[in-house]
Length: 78
Image (cartoon, rainbow, N blue to C red; front, top):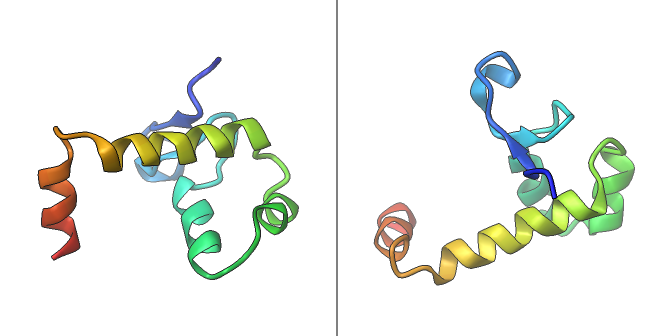
């Protein structure tokens, strides 16, 4: 599978976006934090595939369970 995220200084000033789109990955988390359903997110951003969104959510889950990243997560949470 192609990487679900692209970081390119020429696309959205280097903000991580869903590959093949200009949709910031952050927008997925903003929608979910606001109580917006995943289906509504796809309605708002039809260029993002379900496979991409699930891959990003899985990546986030792995980050939160990674012993290497936990110190950074705790630092950010303060």
